[in-house]
Image (cartoon, rainbow, N blue to C red; front, side, top):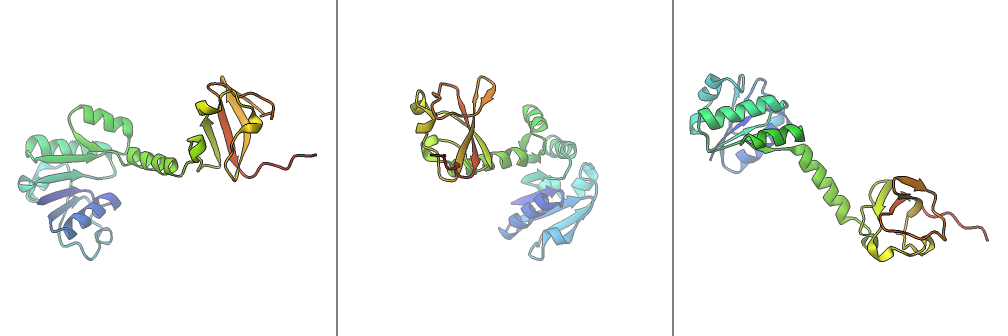
Length: 206
């Protein structure tokens, strides 16, 4: 497969290096080529020039590209380059990297194939938090302070009956937009949000 990657930063260079090691013919086009990012195992071609200049792209071989990835640090440049590849040079697959989720949605709505590392990163973090959650509360407990929607099986129970995870203590209950200090005798209700903090519950005075 012949691949053209626009941009030679961490993302562009990393992708180019990976595709190159898998046996693809890779050309990197960027206003500035930094060989350190590409590494010694990159055996593709590099072209310095404006990535939205049709003549530069054509001289780099875009007309025979099977895949075009615009991965510069600028969303607008990536969108322009991908549109050029898709609409002018008829590259079968043209993908634009977008850092701004709102802009990514906009260009995707215009028919561009886009990826957004910001959105992907957020989803990965949430997935990691979810997988490390405390099962009985069905919640995410990685942050020092976490707000947890009250599970239905705990509605009507007293605060003192909460099955708090080890290393967490209840510091507040949010109800209808107001936060109250939890009292052991307080009854939990639908819509309550438990606010937990790292640390053990203090010893109660006898």
